[in-house]
Image (cartoon, rainbow, N blue to C red):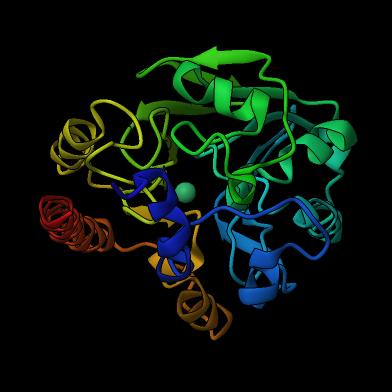
Length: 293
Ligand SMILES: [Zn+2]
């Protein structure tokens, strides 16, 4: 019988454009095959107090407040220094980051958190369901696969669905959206009249959905997340892979003078519909493959 635990490795190449995991080396294999993941990109203000501080291929966001800052996602392990440099070049200090958040515990978004936490002395906030993965640096269901490992980071505070985090007049609310990981966490924030959504993910990527599933209940989780997310109508949709929200194209329009280039009330719905269709297709394919073996 085929070891289904090996399947994620075979799927990694296909998953590269959406989400995957990488070995914490310098340069990591994933950086070698996805050079834009570590390629510097000029940081900029997205909207209101939200700034883009990631690389060309992996998003990180700074929410700046007078009482300190919130940083969402750490990229690959080798991205921590780049993110800190981007924060500095915007006129902020990484040591003023009070809270570190993570969309989900995969090394391309959590890898840099341990180093950033050292630099900032910040409080790491995560869902209970992803805390184990962050603290061990392992991915449930692929624990023995070194390609999935990340530098462990201690979680100081866990947050549940619907709970909020406030700092300096800014409030972010956690919307757990499991499937991509069991603790996948979307964050929603109101900025003036607008709602800004930091969406976790809904891609299948390297996840095994059946026989055995990456974790028990993963299919039900994905479907419940898609159903729940259909009720979300953010004005500004952001994600941990910049291609998902057309970051470069919107940034180019913004630089050309379109101040609201990132305000697009239809963008999230379009992305979500594509994710759901891709999920059902992947589930059918994995199920058929499973029956054939
Ligand atoms: Zn992921």
